[in-house]
Image 1 (spheres, rainbow, N blue to C red):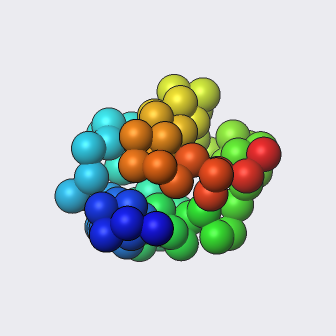
Image 2 (cartoon, rainbow, N blue to C red):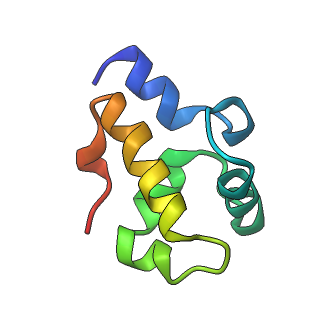
Length: 75
């Protein structure tokens, strides 16, 4: 895993290129960063969470894919 990939996973959500909707979701559920969120929930579980939409899922996958870590998003 590259430094940039690790940085994306461990950065506070406000510092990431994410929509306000996605940042609000992370704040609502108390996720410090993407690493914490991905270690606790798979894609199906995230879609059932209040505040997480299909748009959020596409946004998350796109961000992970562009940083070479899309494999961390489990189905």
